[in-house]
Image 1 (cartoon, helix red, strand yellow):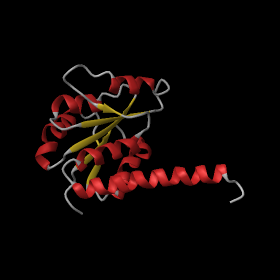
Image 2 (cartoon, helix red, strand yellow):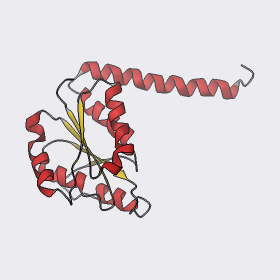
Image 3 (tube, one colour):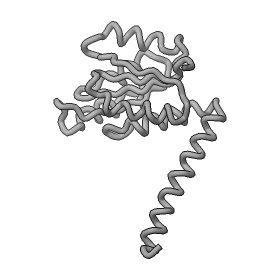
Image 4 (cartoon, helix red, strand yellow):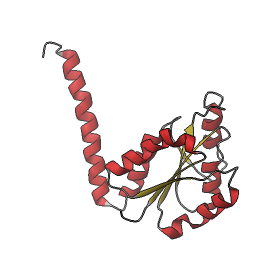
Length: 166
């Protein structure tokens, strides 16, 4: 496999069912990626090393998922020069996911984190692909095809609803 250009990180392996959706999207676009656990609270030294060196390893975009206090995306964004996409994850200790959403969404000026919907790792993968497509026309073409397929799927449903006998 080619060297990873997107890194998918999460605060706990319990986030993998959600964060795996980002990996599936990246795989569908043939975008090399890595996936691992980096806990902002339990492994702060690992977090710092990851965020400080990801760009040196060839990573272009970071997708960071976290539940509860959800500090992982913001801390990575505070340290790394890379774009960070935050995925709030509804965890077992969550307040309906709102704690995670607000922790990732309400970043201070100067430390941006692009934030997707609660458990929205699929969209995080798509956004990462779109960011990469700015410099990679082959990925852009795959995104155009993907969007056309989405449109075709909806139009097929419209056709079935408007003409139920067909």
